[in-house]
Image 1 (cartoon, rainbow, N blue to C red):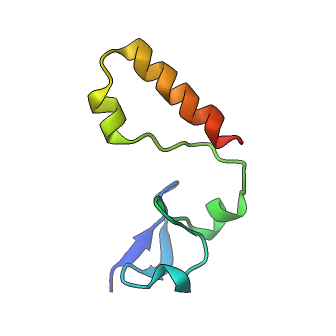
Image 2 (image 1 turned 90 degrees about the vertical axis):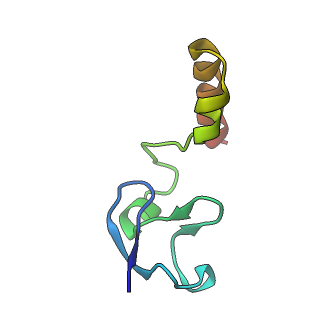
Length: 77
């Protein structure tokens, strides 16, 4: 079986890709699986997720920077 990888650091997790999310620890709905190390960091994340569509559909770099900063501040709430 193919193992799922951490969405934050890329490490292989102990969960098979087909394992239902209710049977996992560290799965973030709408985002994906975290390894135990990243999951245990709690709020001490070094990364944020930015949707590809935001990058593709934002008309200019200044607006994109503003949107990314907004995502960052929202992640701290």
